[in-house]
Length: 328
Image (tube, rainbow, N blue to C red; front, side):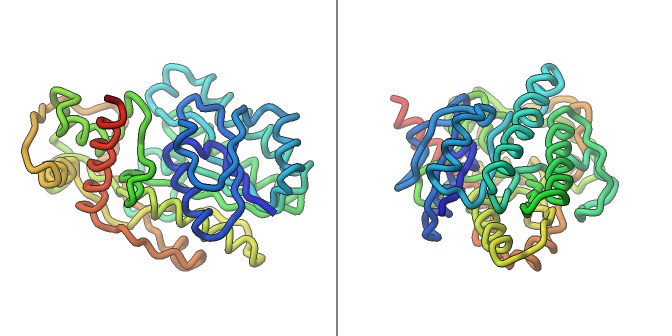
């Protein structure tokens, strides 16, 4: 029996593949390499290049590899792009997920673990947020992910499959051993952009708004190390295998850092300062987005190993340096 990881050549998926292999799993990856890289698929994992909506290919993989569970990362993830091109997101994140889920039902896959997002909550009224917080996504990205959660809930009620939908908060960092990291061009995540700025690949970085109701006036986010997030998926697999009921769970640390605190951590790791410019607020940015991770810890037995901002930043910066050497 094997585990199919869709999007396993991408940022989070490649870390999940490493964690699954370390746990002794047989891993198969399906990725169209639109944003992923074949070199990011580590170890003994088998890579199939193709699309999750290719029914014939998915059927063949499920059959030939005797797939027991699917961990589904494949999709589009840039919130502003989802606003300007919503149909791309409803295709890649919703319609294609429906096709994948249908093939999994037909192929008698037992478990399905879904890469969801805190964007399903929208503008949080209470922080930290539990899974019972109101679901009011503000972007096509968030809506496209929520639609897939709803599909999974309905499918699990009608068919013998259990699922876990993990709602990520702000994913950052890189593999502590330097094997994989965030490699996508033109990334928008704060820690990656700050690391690029510290290494001279960007002339400056902007802070969007300094008048929020937070201690230093900048937005607060819950940053989770990508390797801890990967471990949560392996824990979800073990939980479902043991007969656990389907669940939705937040994935974060339960505390946050402001933009200025993150930039200070990057300066500490780099050993020097860099240019920071003040800009106006971006529409729709909540002052604080922090998770309540009680459910994922209690239900899955998940214990983070990298809950430290300086460690997250140091791993991210080391990976950026590695990318610079790799691309010379």
